[in-house]
Structures are given as C-alpha cells and as structure tokens.
Amino acid sequence: MSGERRKAVILGAAGRDFHDFNTVYRGDPSVEVVAFTAAQIPFIERRIYPPELAGPLYPEGIPIRLESGLEDLVRQHGVDLVVLAYSDLSHEQVMHLASRSLALGADFLLLGPERTMLRSREPVVSVCAVRTGCGKSGVARLIVRALRAAGGRPVVLRHPMPYGDLLSERVERFGSLEDLDRFHCTVEEREEYELHIRAGAVVYSGVDYADILARAEEEADVLVWDGGNNDLPFLRPDLEIVVLDPHRPGHELAYHPGEANLRRAHIAVVNKVDTARPEDVERVEQNVRGVNPCATIVRAASTITVENPEQIRGKTVLAVEDGPTVTHGGMAYGAAALAAKRYGAAALADPRPYARGSLAEAYRKHTHLGSLLPALGYSAGQLEELRQAIDDTPCDLVLVGTPVDLKTLLGFRRPAIRVRYEVEELGGDVLRQRARELLSRSEGSHG
Image (cartoon, rainbow, N blue to C red; front, side, top):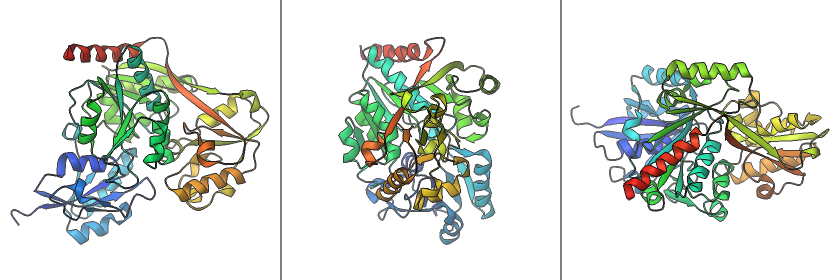
C-alpha cells in the first residue's frame, strides 16, 4: 500500500548495526526497523535498543534477537528489507545470509560506506584490516606515538563494543585504567583499550558516534580510528591504512568487508613479516598490487617481547590468546604460542578437558583452536570459567598472549608471563611521516 513504511531487520553484532541505524534509519519515516539480530558475540541478544537512542519513531525501542531466528522475524513482521551490518564474514557466509533473505522475498542490502561515515572537522587517520587479528591496534598505537612525539594531541576512536547497558554506553571516554572498571568492560574491550591508555592516549567508544565524535573533537587535533574486526571506518578518513596478515594469505580477497578496505587503502601494511613465510608475504603483496595498484605497501614486524624468557625453556606452558583473533578470526595460533615455540617450551598444555560452559562450547564451535585457550570474558560467569580453566589445566607456566593483564584481572593461581607485541615498520618511515603530514594539516587549518 502506498505510504506504508518498509519493514526492515538489521543483521548485526552490537556495533556496526547500531551505527548504521543511527546514521541512515533513525530519522527515516519510510523505513521501520522491527529488530536487530545478534551474532558472533555471546550474551548480546534479548536486549532492547532503548527509545532514548532509537529516537521518536521508536517509542518502545527496538528488540535485539538471535540471528538464527531471522526467518521467523521476517515472516512475523512482513519484513521486506534485510540489512547486513557486521564484519569478518567470508564472502560465502555473506551470500548464505543473502540467500536466506531472498528466499523469503526480502531485499538484501549492504550500505555503502559513504552513507554511514561521519565527517570530522579534524583530520582523521583510519587503521582497519582485512581480518580480525592482523595487528591493526598495534599500527594505531604506532600512529598515536608518532603524533604525540610531533607535539600533537591525538585521540583514539575505537570501533564499538557495547555489550552491556546500551544507554549508559552511549558515549564512553577512557582516560585511565580505572575507567575500564567504571564501564564494566569485558576482556575484549580491555584488550583494545588498555595498551592505548597505558601509553597515555584517550580512547572513546560507545554507541552513538555522532555524540562521540563531537566529544572527541573537543580535545584532539587528529583523530585516529582504530577499527574492529575487518570493518570499514565510521569516520570519513583523510588517510586510510589497512593491515594485512601473511599468516592467512588470500584472506584479504575472501572476507567482507576486508576486501573493500583493501581496495580503498592508501597504505597497505603487510604485518608479521618476521614470523610469516616469505612466499606468503609475497603472495599477499601480489594480491594488493592486483586490486589496488595505487596503494603504498609497507612491511612491518609484530615484535614479540617476553620478560624473563628463560623461564619458558623446557616447560609445559598454557597459551592464552586474544579471544576474537583465534575464534571468529580463525587463527590457529597467536603471540603466546609463537613465544612458546621461540623460547623453547617443551609442550603446550591442553585446556580442552578442563573447559566448562561457554568455553567448552567455543571449542566445539571453533575446532581449529586445538590446545590454545581463548581469553573469552564477556560476562562474570565466563570470566570465572576462564579462571577455572587456567587453574585446572596442568602446566608449569601460563603465557598470556592477550594485551590484558589477565592474572591481575582474574586472580588465577598459576605463575604467568605476559607476552607483548608492538608493530615496527621495516625499511622506512612511511607511517610516521604520513601521520605527521596530517598533524601539519591540522595545525595549518587552525593557524
């Protein structure tokens, strides 16, 4: 009937979905979003996107339901538009979601980045990736250090991770480690924020990026977008840096929206060349040249450091790795496993017999994990499951390969060593130079 609102469902994972709604649909009287769906991240469904965030067209807010119930939602509400709004999906997975929607008679839509990018009055450098776990946050920290060394006032805007009360997470400012507790951050959030904070940087995150941007601009002369997964930036960048992982050659052309990031990039950082096979590094660089010949290719090392590495030799160690990298990122090893091999560990302990609850479910779902322990901590219950798995797994030493100080956070009994890693550009100074050019542009505009 003429004049009726189209009914839409937004497929998401508590991040891009809310941003796309806020920027495209919140004030659109021709479209009614009847539900968000949730995937990838546990415990984020059965919530309501609150009316205070959803706007006057949604006085009761918008329900969030599991993606597995998509067909029921479409039939129940007469949905004729399904919008995909999350990241790190293989191209095959994207088309399965499209097929599910098309089979029900609904349109399937991917919003273009120009419709959802916010424009800042300050210069913006975005650091994104082609897959989860490529090392983009390490590159973002390098950029922040370069800007601060040149006298700049960079502020980091991080891709959203609003896994708790959405209204209280509308705008989150992290200027101290105490703020991590104040906002009840999950392990995944701490993995992304803690090292920035320890380095003296201010980090903003949350739900409503128009409000977040306005706040961040008050204290910055350059904004650094630190992307999540392999998602596109939420801000319109003046400089687009995209990070690639030669441990997963070919993935840069096989995942959404990572391939789009690569095709847009001004600088393509091929990271981890110090631990990847030379032939895989070359394959990744060939793929960059094939789809984006104008991009500047930079090689980088993800340098691993360990305090007292002699304690590892000959020991049976438990490798605890960054959760998203080794779960939906698909990596079969991380920094802890690499450190164990480099410094002569006798064996990796196998935590799988001691995993309970959602951790056991993670092993069933992600069979490639093997003897790695993913640092999953999206709830108090899951944190307790992680602590118990660490204490119950027979081992001499725990290697913590996530950026979070897990021993302090969890209070497990076993001795532990943290594995740290920072990105180092090899054979040049392109990243620092381009960052300083952005700072000069900011100074000129304010001069």
